[in-house]
Image (tube, rainbow, N blue to C red):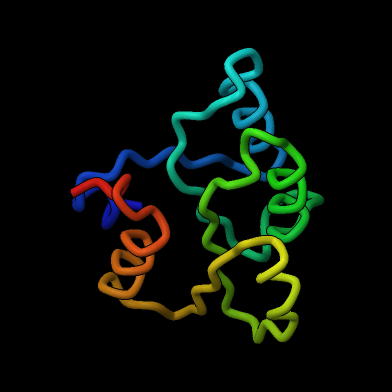
Length: 114
């Protein structure tokens, strides 16, 4: 998180999946847009939901359907096709600072901060 802040990204961290989803739902219920440029989620999360379940919930909200998402994991992830279907970029741990910054810039395009 500090690494991203050092790169001038604004970072919001949530304690669990439910808090993240609540924040995303509250973000823009009337305007149908969001000020969030990117979601980075781990496959294994605190609480009852997995990262994939969070991503499916996000993708079910029309104004979040195109939100860039990066899924991080230390586990071997074999269901790459489902990630493609969900429009998710995979970043396997361990990863370097350069790797995550490069991926963020690639998936956010002109929205990338720095």
